[in-house]
Length: 88
Image (cartoon, rainbow, N blue to C red; front, side):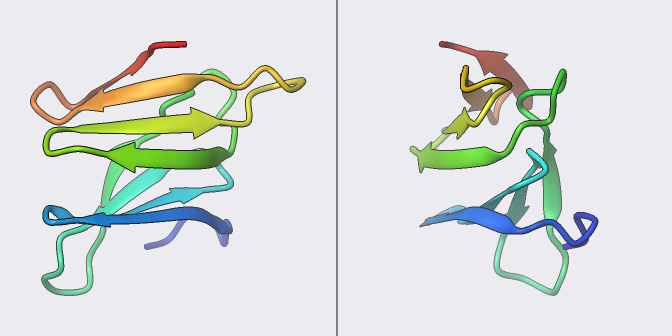
């Protein structure tokens, strides 16, 4: 994927695919077919802070961000709604 030459900070794999979180705050998914990645968005849209951690279950992605001035956040991605919500 092309993310303005951003570093990949986190990679997580489950049966649905491979997920990558970048230093520019974006989450991408690769489903194992072809060469294209799907951008799932930027959880922290206000500051696009770096993705520092990620956990998955069957339908959701949990992402931790660096935040601004050491006040990182946790976001939940609901695949059914394709939205990111701040949960802490």
